[in-house]
Length: 325
Figure 1 (cartoon, one colour):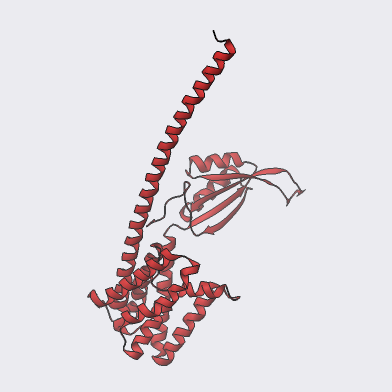
Figure 2: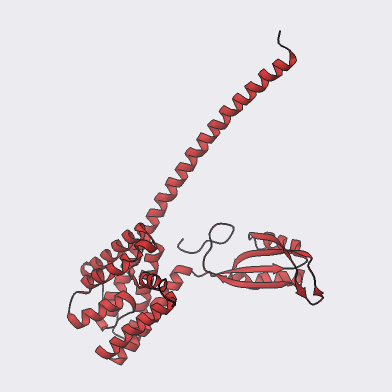
């Protein structure tokens, strides 16, 4: 007859054994579900990238053949070099875009990776093919409309291709590579690069065409920003107030936004040096919600300290999804 201690050990051993099996089964199901979710995300992400790249190619092709090429305008970057070279030599713009872009894109192998290279080469090849095959209509000969809408559709094409994980203009890749070897920033390199292109255009073509081409470039660059950043620009808001608990509840319940609360220490203020601890609230909202947030915070604490800064992008949390994500 086993003693009470022996019975206890036997029961405990059986409980641990059954619990181990249950955990193993749960873990297996979790791993399978996680694997299916990752596969689903990979497939959906690949489909989204392909759609974005195709939209980019079609839009850029329309901007080039429907507006820019028939009217003799150029743009900045690799596309601008290709357009300028094509006008002076008569070589097909499709061939020039393909061969001039490849050296720029290959610079991104170390900077960004193989997937970027593959998508970019595919996008550029499809753009060159679209220019040759697709019969885009010539929309207008009005120079101002050509500069604006030609840049708009070309910029949309560049923006969509970047959203798809590639590029159809490798100027930024060159700028990133050179900026790491010198003191100039990426923006400085792009600016100098495009100034050189438009200066050559003014000399070889005319000052008028160069000026209209600058408008095309500005329209394209603003459109790229719009496509990449979306309509709802995000703003990070930091709020410091002794009424942090009430403000946090307001953000959660009224604005329905997520937030982070972290502990800080007060420094020098109106009452002198004060090292008391205080809660600091951080949340991310859209620019359309800034006014409502400030009004609600002032109702709770008119003397609260609020700091705002622009945020280019967000992932996860309770922030509204951007368009085209």
